[in-house]
Length: 276
Image 1 (cartoon, rainbow, N blue to C red):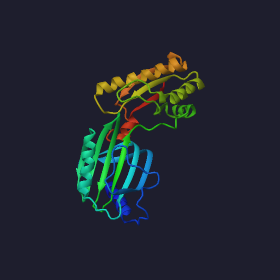
Image 2: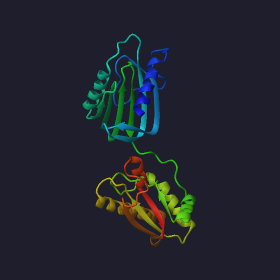
Image 3: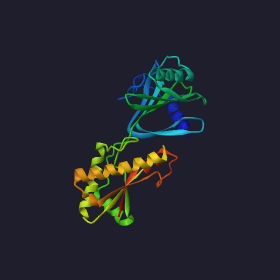
Image 4: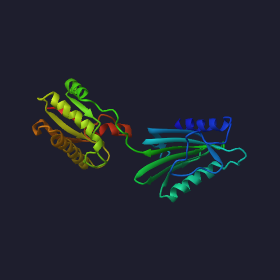
């Protein structure tokens, strides 16, 4: 369905009347590669954080989150259109030259390719679709975690603990497979310290949780190491009494969502505060 919608958008671009053969205002080619000769940008959507579902095999897709570009190219007047295959192969070759790879290629009815490249430490995915109308489009996602702009405050944490005895916290960040707290975790840790100051008698289990990706034993170890890191930070930086916190790790054993999709795995990677 997503492929059909994308192809329909490209067709609309092809049949729309063109007043000028100029790029859409504010548009530009992605940093990863140039455009096919004889084309201009008809539509350009730049979304700071979004997700796109890329096909990685006949049966499977993969959702990638991050900076999302949708770029639709239309053929200039009096320019002979390349074949869809020519467009697809040009992008495949361009990505391979910079160390990238072809993830999936299919022809139904035009030429659609999914590409991936890691450049300067960033993983970039691209879906190039050419349907034979002369136009083609690119969905490109620079994979990255979302900047957390909204943080649960001490009052909302307290309300959840009062109602259910625990609260899941998602504003605490670690690199994949690591237990070192990232700097962007500080606003959430500050709210946890406020929560403890609001109720001097409150004692908490700080419980680390992971998704099910990787080895079970490693995930169990990682979850306890992350919870210890949170406890140590609250003690050292926010002067929380050691006796009020106890670090625990449940690894992948208490999911709150299915691990079959990335959305569920992201929910399962969390720290919970549980009232003792």
